[in-house]
Length: 258
Image (cartoon, rainbow, N blue to C red; front, side, top):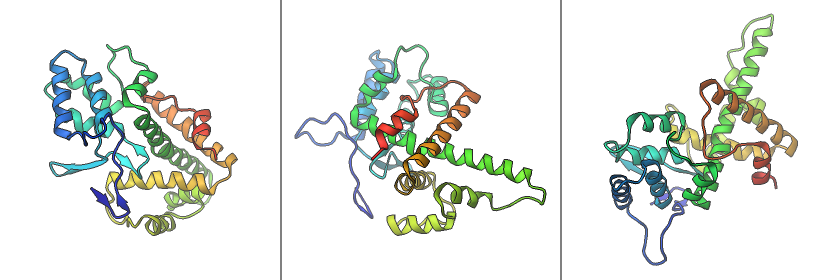
């Protein structure tokens, strides 16, 4: 499998030297056998995620991109794909709680460290890249958009319809059109019209990397803090959920400071 930028890297997994890549069908079969054999479905799912190697695939007409830019791992998207193959073995309410709210089963005693161990170091590191580079980045954009809305409402002479562009200008110093053009120059991926969710996540991660490269450390820290605060408010507004990592400014600085 390859992309316009060369071979797509395989995901790290529990492959023994000389045995080749485990086929998706084999991983799914082992997961189903583990569940029917008495293992909790969430543990069986994590073991399947650990073994998984395909960074993307198309199944029944739907394209799944689990690994963004070879660095950011969307583990819940892979979980959705795997749980579709075990729908008859997993309680629907627990499955929906995981996929829609990232709530782990309440009948399990599993913490972030155990989650990281079961994913493996490479996948968990890529999972953190996804959390910071996609989820926190989206939260930063939302936070800035809300700031702009407040400023617009405070104006005496009307409403600025270009607030979407202003969000990009304020965070990244360029309009959305300029950023899309630069993204195309760097990646060869032209985003026009109806953009798929996978491509938009990839664009968001690209914006995150651009922000790290173009801003000074103080600005990076300030914007990241703003995104983390927005994400926390969003989680608390719905429910307290776990994401398999403790997201904080210190962890961010340790991972992304030059």
